[in-house]
Image (cartoon, one colour):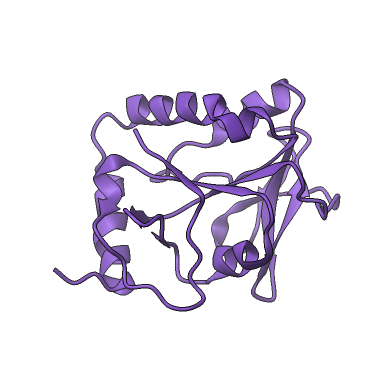
Amino acid sequence: MDNSKLYLRKIYREKRKNIENKEEKDRLIYEKVIAHPKVLSSNTILLYYSKEEEINTIPLIEYFLSIGKTVALPKTKEKIIQFYVMKGLNDKKLGKYNIFEPVSNHLITDFSNSVCIVPGICFDSNLFRVGYGGGYYDRFLNSYTGCSIGLTYRDCLVDRIKVDNYDKKVDFLITD
């Protein structure tokens, strides 16, 4: 089987569109995320606003805001990703790549005691991921000092992904 990123991106994007029992699987992942020891002990959660075929992160955003954690979402600029504080679910606008991003200009620069929830189309058993191809998260994780957690469906786990020197794996992986 071809395990190149281009091939995996094509196959698993399609597979995610047809996940069976998606709401139930999203709920299981949500429960595991909010109970994760690194998440429980963190002050700041770096999240992303999910698209339809992704694991639904909107309940996570709502939950973390409701318990007083700092929630920050990414904005991209010139091939880099930066995280900005989100005050509420309405504190967003459509940005680059048709991804919701916060309207806030409150940039997070202190990543001590933070967790970054990392999107991926698929992940492998070594905790490497196939993203959307821009390298934004790999560049961010290269200097990120907090804990990174990938989210994926069990149906989107692969044995091995061909990785490059710049690819960064996550610290933990949560599935349904």
